[in-house]
Image (cartoon, rainbow, N blue to C red; front, side, top):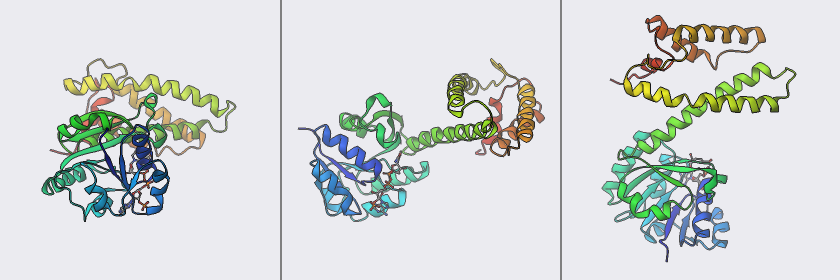
Length: 289
Ligand code: NDP
């Protein structure tokens, strides 16, 4: 028989997780603050707990997928976590995960933090490529790998409990930059002749081609030499960005989504790093000692 999964939180994501474990033949105990959300899962064979404490008492592997870190604290407040493996999939900050790990340790639980890189329709669909970053107590992942890999792929992020959240947030942050650029691009061409659907195809292939430069950026950062393998130097990039800004003005489009990045490159150039490409500007962002 397969191991039982205790799942707290039946929002869009928690419900999708529960369905895939049930479909794979795992016994599943579910609990949700608003009890009605558990009914569809009861119909699929889940055991529905009335309280979080009752749910936690029913199995060793406890998975939380709640709104935010505060709701995790509230939901687990009256539960006995001693001897449990707590797998926390709620999105939070790295520091929150570190604190939650210590909180779990004090209650006798082993702790694994997860950052979900998927949306609910990708859960239980391996071809969709969704996965979860895991960090914290490695043995929890190793021992429960077969169970945890049912809904989404697994990827180890490191022993620091907050590492999974950090990588999750790094990817989401890059995505926001992407969305900012795409929003600006559509604003520029919206009223032109080419259908936007056709333009979007060009956008996707261009972004895919450009995204691969992250690999050489990684090499530059690791080598500490930002002048290595530069294909577009900083004076050219800064001049190009001024052209982008002038063109936006001509088109009557606000440049505000892109101006922070342009300003960063201007500042790096003003410091005299003419031989670099764009990667060295990272040094202006990192504030920690
Ligand atoms: P939903 O808003 O659909 O569900 C939130 C869940 O949290 C509900 O079960 C809700 O219970 C519960 N909850 C909120 N506050 C409390 C509280 N104080 N005490 C107990 N339970 C509480 O969110 P999702 O399922 O979409 O997301 C859950 C987590 O997964 C989030 O951290 C999100 O960032 C993450 N995630 C979601 C993705 C997505 O695409 N949906 C993608 C990647 C990560 P109730 O029903 O009673 O309101």
